[in-house]
Length: 177
Image (cartoon, rainbow, N blue to C red; front, side, top):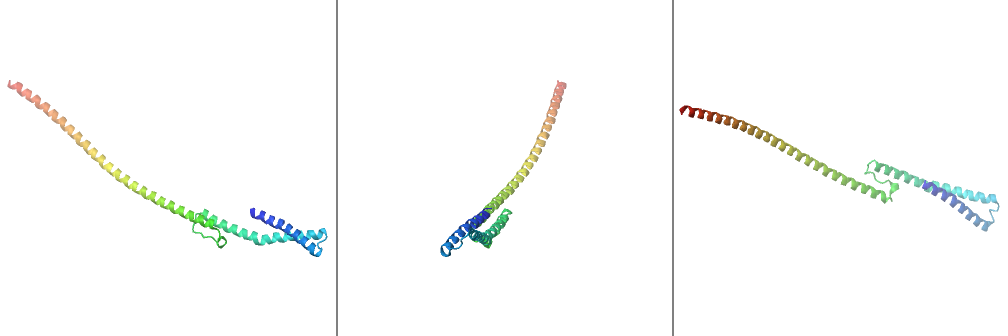
């Protein structure tokens, strides 16, 4: 909307001012325009010429630049950083800086993402190795527990046998005495 405001300001304001100046100059040199109708025709025709000339030149140029800028911004918004500035944008350094900045930022994000992915993979590998070691230790603890349990049973059996031997020894001692 700023373009239209400028067009109307330039066309109407500049046309009316130009019509008044041209009319005054013509009146000084030729004594024409003399009547109100001639003055109105001159001022209105200058305003129409300024407005149409501004529309045909500057306003159309600004509209083409706006459309080209919109295309570039839409491409950037969709993530396409490979778009180069059209010919209409030859002097638009800001968009080139923006594209370069976005490319650098995207490269850094890709690099960080790669590092995070690599770190996650390494942590996952280490976690799998630790899990496997924990399983092996758990199996070793189970075997040790089984061995201790078997040793306890053996000790209980040995204790019963010792008790039986003691009873046998007492019986034998009692029979001999």
